Image (cartoon, rainbow, N blue to C red; front, top):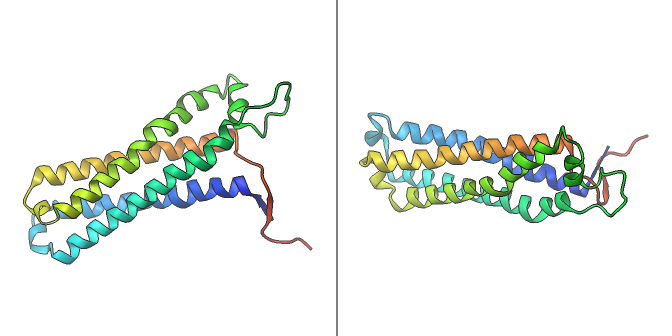
Length: 188
């Protein structure tokens, strides 16, 4: 059993940082929903305020790790230009997608989303973490503040979910592969 270094980084980016972020987002939505219930004020404590701030801060770190690893590690491999005359485009994912009319849209729509819109995820969740920490006690008394916080977390979840879907489809149609081979399990 083996994996290449590029495939490993793609796995870390998508199934590690990205999937953990998506799971954490559902937890954040649940926490914020509980905070907006009618008796939330009675159950809110400084400890629960701190936990919410820490939780959103960890989510922000995951979001930044996902976007930065995708932008600065995976994307250059994806975007590598194929030398003139190359017939096997397997090592050049972008060129492979663009060479086939059936897969061209995966680059045009999917990768454009990942290149641009996915950056909203860490920005929105970082803002949410800041608000949760700075205005922790005010969240109990300000419905507009809770709604704004919920909206930014939900927006980040949506943008991350769509980016994750496009990432999976891009990797299925034109995987970023290559680099050194890492042997995980030796055969007999």
